[in-house]
Image (cartoon, rainbow, N blue to C red; front, side, top):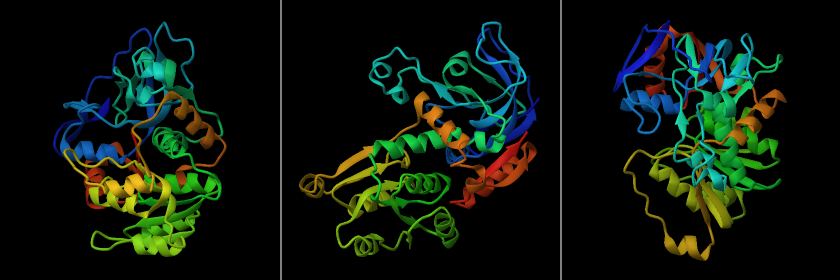
Length: 342
């Protein structure tokens, strides 16, 4: 089969490799759609991911496709079915899994290889995090399950209420998913982005107010004007930079909640005003990854038609063009997702 193999920093080759062998509890999926992701771009730029992938390896993790073979021990999936599989599954036995924190599992099994004609889905993911796609749902829509599950978990962990004012910093695909979810929950959304195109997309998804902010500008005064001086109830940071982490804390009201959803570069440090945090009783949270329950919730939202690829995917490219796509995404921050069609 043809597959995209990552050999190191910005070293990607689409080449012929063996079709994966499946074990007794695995399935083999013919990839119909694989979506690009900001994490994949980071992996391409850095040449590795400490937890997810060690080169050389086929990479990519947002996919939907057709089952072409199943192991003898597989009972819940049949050949010919259309499926979406998450990129991980917890062990269900460790300290964190027993406390409902499966995303922090001590033996979290990751799976990569979506940028290929076929992918092996390991047995643990088959059992816990693989679902048949309903007939009315497209492959493009179904492939959004993994990133949506991460966003949905982060959003619900901030405990939003209808009528809350929420600022969302960063309007790439993840930030736009937050905008859409916040409107579905009946919240007022202030979208903060760097480019007019990003702000226009946020407005099309229902954002109520828009703020254009750059590295040398400060959106906090505008936030205060829009909230009668109090600040927002919830601030969600979806960029992953120390500066925007600071913005999130500075724009939330007393008693409000900040979610540091965007992961900053390794070794980043952030200094926060302890008096502000203490005397304003600000809650600071960070959200990493998803859990099986949120994969299911995300699929339900997609099946209901609340989230579709039309909002977040604006290009299609063949697998052979993946290197060009990755380079384009590196130089065009904030671009929407590209659907890779192996």
